[in-house]
Image 1 (cartoon, protein in one colour):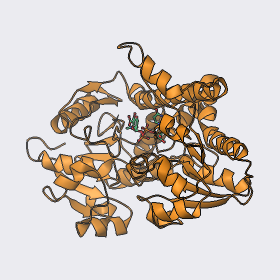
Image 2 (cartoon, helix red, strand yellow):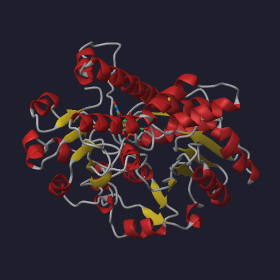
Image 3 (cartoon, helix red, strand yellow):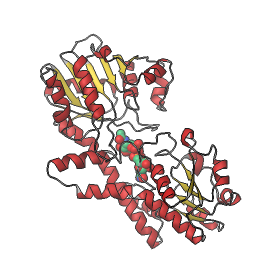
Length: 429
Ligand code: SAJ
């Protein structure tokens, strides 16, 4: 580790986590090398084409240029390596650590003695000691002596206008005091918020998993309540907003057609699988996960009920799915429930059309007007402003829509219930 002179930081993986981090470190005076194995992404970034809709990156990427490469040899001079690669789940919903292993092996091959390696990718407890540490030991390093390894779970929330890499509090854990000390110094130099030291690297790994499992479980809870309230004829959104008037001991979550994204539906699996190896069965967490995974099918059941009330079959009914992204006003489609809804509609032999203004390349229709004109029924799968600020009972009536399922409860239910030319159903309302 060089002292006093400018330290070199290599960020491995320039996605929605790595790129803001790289720009921020450059802004704070580090000499930053951004590495990504996708050379097309590197060439695009070199042309100043910024593929991120991250406000911080949009503003600062041009101001604080980083050196960009897809050649791993270029990171050998770095004092600090930060691994920000994806940690997806595979088709069997098992944790896929291939990117983390690949990145760790690359750093181990090219780094220098005395460097710090920080893993930001979301992983379950034990990954650092069972997967990452052995890779560096196999490369001849002694952790805590001539290499330091820490974990600082990423907390980027795509599209968030308020919280970004500059101000989100972080936690850091390491294998040893020196590794923790260097890591705390680095993150405290780039983040204007609390950087909390954790007792050990396992605790740091567990923080992110707990955060996102907490969110998964709470969403599953309101999803079950919504299904119950659909039978009881209670408006779940009104009840949640009523409960939220309690200023303590309540945190609102809302039911919807499903839980998408790269974090909430994914991270709990990491804990379930690793705990199983140690002999613990997360029954409650698994139930929550499956409750959320059942929401796309439930949404299609709601459409079937709505069409029944209009004495219309599912078969050959043209259903317009509004939204493909996993959350409002972004283009990210990872784990989006919209695709499961489409599959279930096709299983019911519906004719499916799609439109998402943020994902036009995957949309079958090119405008809201077009999909409304061609559809008999609608399912809102994403609460984009382009839908909730535009759709009115008059517009649906004009286009002879016979049924609508508001998968994100984003429309004014009472207003839509007044119109008798179609049936409106929400999720839990
Ligand atoms: N969702 C619900 N009901 C809710 C909240 C979300 O059904 O009450 C659905 C969303 O529609 C979406 C999915 O869950 O399909 C995930 O939504 P999200 O708001 O959690 O968005 P993410 O996936 O971008 O989650 C990120 C996470 N950030 C990190 O992991 C660093 C999560 O920890 C944050 O809590 C979340 O952003 C946030 O608060 O926005």
